[in-house]
Length: 411
Image 1 (tube, one colour):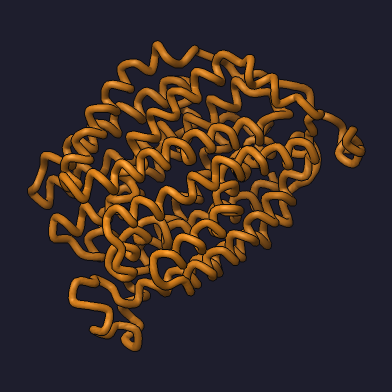
Image 2 (image 1 turned 120 degrees about the vertical axis):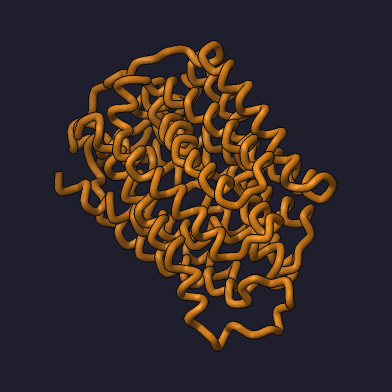
């Protein structure tokens, strides 16, 4: 369908920007900005803290107005400006302020782009979301691959003034590079469909239906635990690799392997959904993630450690794709953005805060190996309990309003 083209381009460019920022931000904070492990944990906790407010707020704005794609476009535009501001911040207080400003818009983009995508692709078949989402992983992969090469090709910025323990003095250039890609994403978002399922509106107070939704509430509890055990190791992964003697190239190569495995798994999401169901995908993702953390903590041989990271793809597809698909099955269509926002508030917000603060504190005292080991044991346990925690559900199809309804005034 023609409307899947701009949607695919949006996922490609926005996730491409994350491929610049996500794998290297903690390394930048630790080495280039010179923050301690506790300070790094505090900075990483800011976005989820802000997201606890902004994600459900923007989800409600999108559901009440029905203007999901326009809200997405403006939030993405604000995110681009936030990355530019973060690039100018120097010192711990300034980085805290800039990270807070970025989080006001940036934390709400992913849950909203997920709800918009599921609405647009509602009638496109079981494989449609996985195929569109896979292009996001492709964009992420390409930029992870390009960034170290691009920075190494800028000798003007590669000087020794940043300190002998800094693996890449030019790493701060990732902020304007990220901002440019996010700006392109914002322009693409203005071209996304605005009517049909994506324009469905919720009435005032409809969000209370979620409070009585047993499957939704139990999933929030599961999501809190799963993301608490995932956030810390994922964000501190660059520091873990540096602790094993790796450099920026090794971090890049690790991500290349992770994404090579992830891309075909994302493409096969439809098949996985048919065989396992959304609940089964979540169980597999959390369990395999636990195995990955444990093996990473115990293995010191570089080649074996490298091979273990192939489990990343199974973990991400199971948890990060199983979650929105499970929510899309249990939440009313008119509340899809609110449901995704609340889930992100719990998973990226509350769980992220607790996980990042705990991880930063633990790294300062016991090192990254202990962090990975404890999170691995916890994830394996949660995987065993997930079948009991999560009710089995089937997707509920609801009527979509005629295009004329998209322009009606809220009551």
